[in-house]
Amino acid sequence: MYYGSSTENDMDFSQFVIMFRSLFLEGFARPLNGVRTIIKALQDKYRSLGGIRKMRCGVAKIICDEKHVQKLLLDDGSEITADKIISTAGYTETLRLCDTHKNQEAETNVGKLTFTETITLFKEQPKDLGWKDTIIFFNQGEDFKYEAPSTELVDPRSGVICLPNNYAYSNDENLEYGILRITALAHNQQWFSLEEPAYQKAKQDWYTTLQKTALGILPGLKETQAEFAARTIAKDMFTPRTVHKFTGHINGAIYGCPDKVKDGRTHLDNLFIAGTDQGFLGIIGAMLSGISMTNLHCLQSKE
Image (tube, rainbow, N blue to C red; front, side):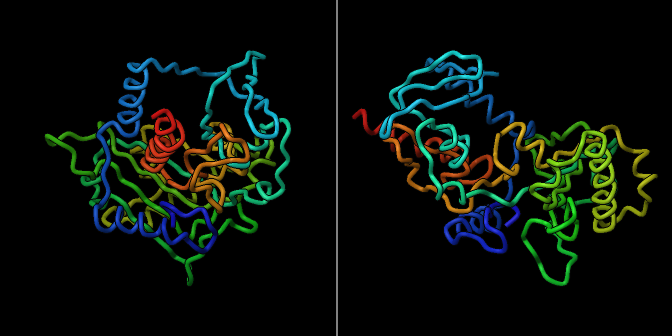
């Protein structure tokens, strides 16, 4: 569920099949330099084919009639036209941009599940501290509850601990610093209501809580938080507010809406959905979704 469910306390069966095969039969994998390795390869290929990547020019509105997108109006007032448009902004988020369409069904199809994640860089390699695992899924509650916390900003009872140094990289390479990542479920609205000083304090408080949780689970190291802090080189934390800032997803929902649009179609004949809300989740899922929807709706129609 933590790695692929957008539904509270449940999981779409087709997504379960994908995740079970990926996690338990094929196993985890990671490039040494992380996702940037994949993004750079895609970007280089895209540019070699004549594609243009425009940054810092958000789409303010999708200008359309009842059946067809006419053009995109950008935040700076400029316009873009295209025969076909693929949006990865999210299903409801995309429909909200359409200037002539009100879809009440889409307004109820909004993701509730979101996360916080902390990252800590430290001087040693994790194995030197007795941490030999790569991924640890933990649950310290009497029951496992995969749902948005009802009152607290974060639910620290369950989550994921990741030590990316412990992947089997080629040629005995490894990351320069030790990395500890901790993921936990977060409240999907309260983070947005905090004033900036309270927001920064909440991040610090919950970073400390999650760090304490992880150190209590990880074997081998018998140190206090203060002692481990002395090893720390840098630290950071993202919240639902961070996710919303960089993706625009309502509630900062990382896995998007619960009811996916698996064929990628919208009410407009030249506007299609790809990415999380189409149905493939995570980094690799987003890639597969983009490839599948482009092949289905753009490339095949030219033949």
